[in-house]
Structure formats: C-alpha cells, structure tokens
Length: 403
Image (cartoon, one colour):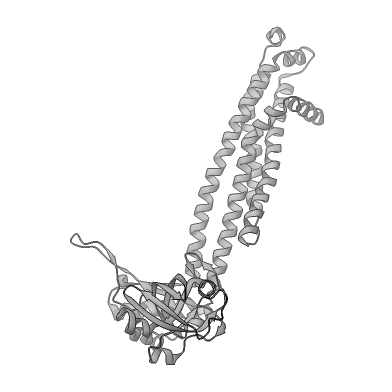
C-alpha cells in the first residue's frame, strides 16, 4: 500500500517538474545553510583554538585594566602600571611562574633601499621566543646583551622579509625603522619561522626589538603595555594565574588596574563566543526551512485545487478520507525529504570548499546533519497537513462536478 502511494506521489510530482523544484528550493537552501553554518563555525573554532594552543602551553597574559569614569570623566585604559621591575618581582614571588616577558606594541614604517613595509614593532625580551613558541629560522633571536646595551638590532617576521628583501638575504642588513618622529637604523640579526595569523594578530608582520631600546631610544616610556607570563607546568596554570592576581592586587591595591587570563580561559572564551555566533546564524538559516514549509503548503494547495476532479473519482470508486489524507501527506514528505537530501549534499560540499580554501580540517557535525534532516522532514509533514485535510474533506459529488 505505502509503495503504491509513493509511486503515485512521484508520478504526480514528475508531472510538474518546475513546480516540484520550486517547492523544494526553500528546503534545500535551509538544510544546506544550517549544515554549512554549523560546520564552518566548528572548523573556525577549531582553527582559532589550535592557533591559541600553538602559542605554547602555560601562557598567561596580563593586560592593563580600566579606571572607572567618575565626576563626568570617561573611563580609560590604565597605562602606567607595568614596569620592568614589577615583571622581575612577579617571577621572584610567584612559585609557579618561571618567566614574565614585558612587551610594547607600536606601528612602524620599515625601509630598505626602495622597499618599505608598514609593520608592527614588538619590543620585548629574549624569553619571548620560548614563551610564545616563536622559533628562529635564520640567525638568532634577541639576547640579554641586546637588552643591557640598548642595541639597535631587529628580528623580522616572514612577511617583513618577503616585502623588504625579495631577492636578498636579510641577515646583517641595515633597515630604517620609523615610528612617529623617530627614525633609527637597525641591524637585522634574525628571521623567525612563519607562524601566521592568530585572530587579529599576525606574527609574520612583526619586527622584534629589545624592549630597553624602545624605552630608552624611541618612546622614552617607563612602562610597558602588557606581560606575557609562563609556567613550566600547564596543569598549574590556574594556580599561577591566582598567584599573579594576588601579587598585583597587593602591589597595586586595585584589582581593576589589571586583567589576568591564562591560555585555557582564552580558549574557553573563544569557544563560547563562536558557539553563540554559530547558533545564532544557524537559527537564522533555519528560518528558510520555515519559508520552505510555507512554499510546500502553497504548492500542495494548488495541487489539491488542480486535482479536485481526480480526488472525486478516487472517492467515487471507494477511496476513504484517510487514503486521500495519506496520499497528500506522502507527497509533502517526499518533497521535504528530497529537498533535505539535496540540501545535505550541498551543505557538505560548501563546508568542504570553505575548509579546503582556508586550509582547515573538514568537520561535519552529525548532530547538525540529523537535526536539519529531521527538521526538514517535520516541516514537510506539518505544512502538508492542512492541504491533505482539505483534500480529504472534499465532497465527492462536488469534486466530480469541478471543472
């Protein structure tokens, strides 16, 4: 019986191929969008988490906080908190912290002969290489002697080398570093291996110079912008974070003057934010499934009107209401299931293409696939009930008279 109904439904749908395609288009788009959005979101989340993890285990980031706005003043970021001496004190008094790297970030224009490149200066210390897991490809990284003597030496990221030295070996070459009104000549002592983009930060666009050189020769500042702390035991990262918070609270007497986040907290935050975004986008994409359901209902209502005489003949030869009802529900389900299958294939193809061009691993969520497919089938069933009931309630005498 059921196979006969399916056969009749397919024959009816094949008689109007264009209408059939238009009726499943909304379902195709909805299913494809839901699967693609969730898959791409998980791929992007995995990529970001991998990049954060690639910074090295046991990383803790200490940044300035914000002073509250009082008396009509605007709340602003604290800039006179982190000194080089405070960094050394954190290492000495925090049992689980083995390194604290001070850092200053500034934009700079680099010049070499006729080539120039707008880069970011990272003024830091030799421990930066280990704490941020930035291995050297050529030459060397910064040394303690560079820090002590305020040397004008620089280590370049891969993109900087590509732009300034397209056909030359950069080692020991002299480049001009211009930031604001300051223009100094630096010697290139090393090149880092390519590390790529990490959210809004691109390691390959960086130029690394001694933090003392920045403070003494360029900015004249007495404070750095942030600390990059490190613990040798990643399992103790939470305890290490608490130790830094405790020390800074005692030292600065105001917990709002600083923010401390360890690597795991950053990864969890990224996961929460991307999950919310993915769910929101998937919800928006799911609306097209409802639109597709409305399209199915409209098409089925038209089909009922066009086949009124056919319905009358079937009732006249003994078909019951439930037979007519089931026939039109089967047609509605075939429309939605066909659209779901095509949308599933299209969603997987889109996800695979995005993963391929972004060099991400392809991640397909079985939950999203099952959910989208079940939802699309449910939409077909729900929106097919009214047309099916309308067909089943037709009076056979009036249906036979219908022209």
